[in-house]
Amino acid sequence: AMEGTSNSRTDSLIWTDAQLEFLINLLVQQSRLPSMKSGGNLKPKAYKAIEQNMIEQFGPGFTVEKIKNKLKITKAYYNICKQILATSGFGWDSTNKCVVVENEVWAVYIQ
Image (cartoon, rainbow, N blue to C red; front, side, top):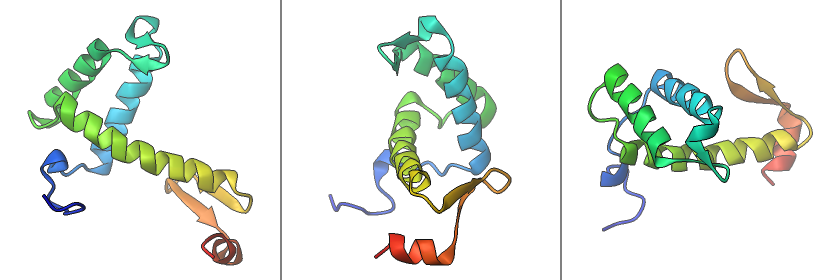
């Protein structure tokens, strides 16, 4: 199979911002329950609960597998955001949920 094709079968599900936000809220809820965690990771039953919620809310496509695939991508994105935010000159715009940066800082950052 070709790498990096947009129609890769692992994540053929298109996620809306609302769906991703809902998922993240579920993850936060689950991670606050001591019985749902094991060594800093969520237990399979936590994912099962999240899957049920996602399917009830958005339909049968939102399986644990799809959720985990999405989280891998999102986590990578999140780590990039954290790195960017840790760089001085960057800020977080909570209204628009995006990184705010002065043009000259960005110019230096991407060099």
